[in-house]
Length: 145
Image (cartoon, rainbow, N blue to C red; front, side, top):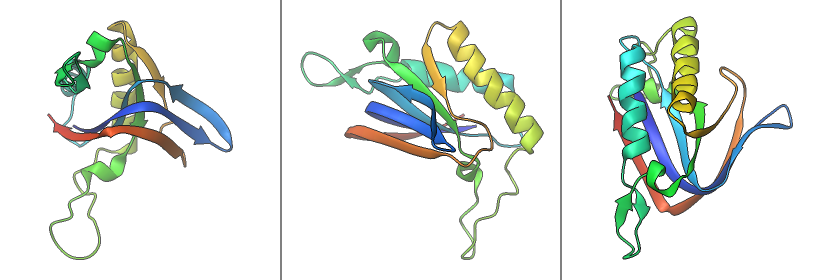
């Protein structure tokens, strides 16, 4: 399971000209799910995302987590993160989870984040989405579990 996280001042996702998810300060998570991923993978990645210290403290050092700043989380499914780009000029998605497996784990991730007390918004799985954000910093990290 991979997560590309971006520290944002705001972010939103639009499907068919309708805002389906929107946050203020927090993290935009683009979530890539691979064949070998499980609910335990989702729990481990969520723990890392919510506790990763990428927000500035009073000394302007990245010492605070999403939980520390009571930030919001926007989760967007992003199957292209599972691409193998090492060979050729076209990505291979052979390691990506099936749509059924990915949908189940995506829903699990979002529900588990809410159960953990986070303020969570999400995109629409497998939809054509337009994502807009204001990357704060910019600060972007690729997390893999």
